[in-house]
Image 1 (cartoon, rainbow, N blue to C red):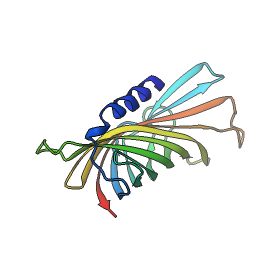
Image 2 (cartoon, helix red, strand yellow):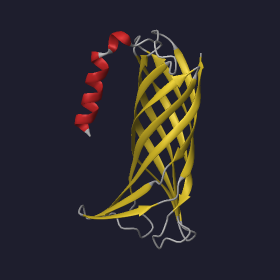
Image 3 (spheres, one colour):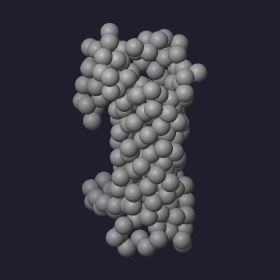
Amino acid sequence: MKKGLLALLLAVALVAPVFATDKGAMEIDAKLGYIIEPLELETEYGKYKYAYPQESTFSLGADFYYYLLDNIGAGIGINYVFDSKFVDTGYDGAKLGATNIYLSVKPVLDVNENKIIDKVYFLGQLGLGITRYDDGWCDFSQSGLYWGIGAGVEKCNVIVELLYSVNYWKHGDDGWTDKITYTNRRFAINVGYKFNI
């Protein structure tokens, strides 16, 4: 994963002259997402892994960006992932969701020569994820690391993006063992609108 991020940053640096968002510009991106079959992974004692698929669900989010340079915006964002039920796992009625608060970077590439798309951009997100769990018998919220990486396109301020994100957490309260770490992986298709400030 680190090699992939390094390659992405190198690609951004090599094409910087063709980026086209003015320094000092600000925007707010509002998004609705469809999350395709999220997956929870449990790792016991650092070696035993179990996968628990969930139903597809939706998310709502918003990002604020300030363009520090002509080519790169930096900002903050929040994303609310609606609870979704586990599928064929024996966890009847159990649901999992999350709220993520993160710092974000958004390099934007101008492609005005193309009449179909105005801009192409990349996303990198890193922050705090608060995971919610409820099975009818117990419920809790646990915080942990959140990160996401993706890309998107823009046409007349309408945005469409693909985003892969991961939440991590550990739960050792209420009789749960602290020898298990949890990961929730999501792949989302986001559609939204960019408001220039």
